[in-house]
Image 1 (cartoon, rainbow, N blue to C red):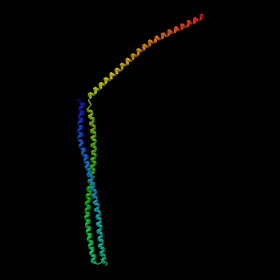
Image 2 (spheres, helix red, strand yellow):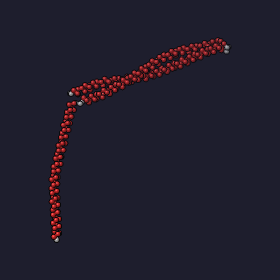
Image 3 (tube, rainbow, N blue to C red):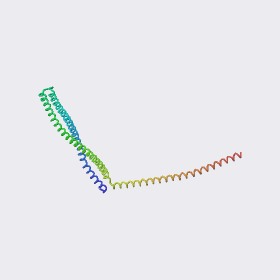
Length: 241
């Protein structure tokens, strides 16, 4: 095997090794991206659910705070009615106490929902960070995947080129060129030989035509002389008469 062919065989082996190493990372990266997109979808769903609970907790807190304030207002109104004699003091105290108990229940609910609201806020913050991280990783891996695929294309093109070059034998090429040169030289010599023969044929024909042409002119001259003699003889005869 020639040095030229050995060099390209080595290049071919190295290219195949590169492609073999790239195939698995591409598949792994594609699977990783699919998994992360699924995780991102789940995170977004969880984020929406927690945000909904946070909003509901906030609404409940406001609602219970309003109720607590309303019970306090009613207790004060009952005491005022007792002072104005509209209801008995005992009845006003009893109802006002019940209203204050309701107020306390509402305040407990407000404290509980406020705590839940804070917890939901922390959960929302954590989930938003997770979503942001996943999106960053997905973008990074997708860019990495593009790079890997581009490398595979280059490696494949290089492999095909090396494969073609490895099949080229310089000695065979040179031998083929020499044979082509001999063939062309032979064709050129043959063409020249046919041209020489054609010229010789035309020269011979010219000689023949020239020879025939000279005889034809001599015959014409003889015929003309005979015609003139005949005319002269005829003229002389006519004069004698």
